[in-house]
Image (tube, rainbow, N blue to C red):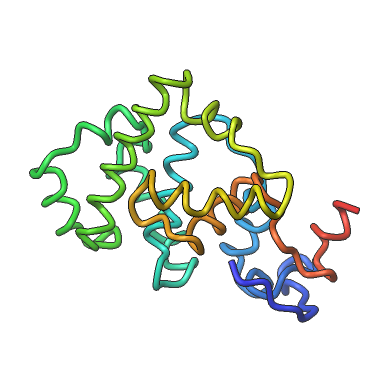
Length: 185
């Protein structure tokens, strides 16, 4: 999410939010309840990583509008189920107008689910693997970008950064006037 500095109040509830979430109720709800909040399940992690992959080149609102369809078509983002998707399921998804129909991104999600399972086999869960990756200093955070690029598909530095901010692994850059920034002080 881009962090732009301008004070804007949501017309629905009057709260001041980050500019990108200030005027749309769907974006405001995501900003207020999910952005920067830790995830506690592997399915939740696969969902959030997948949404970031699908968002590449598009607006976050488009992804959130299609989120329920993504959850349904990707079977709740259960890594075991998604990892079993084959050519038939990928073709079906690539023709489904209720989701973003980018075949390369769909294939990346399926491959990433398989990586989740591989990491879970060696570490107990993807979540445990991720918890073992330090992100306390700028150098540690910078080391995560090439790690994610090597490990997952469609996870370049910017997508990785957005994912890590979205799940609270690194602090999201709330605007200084945002109520979330104020609440975290």
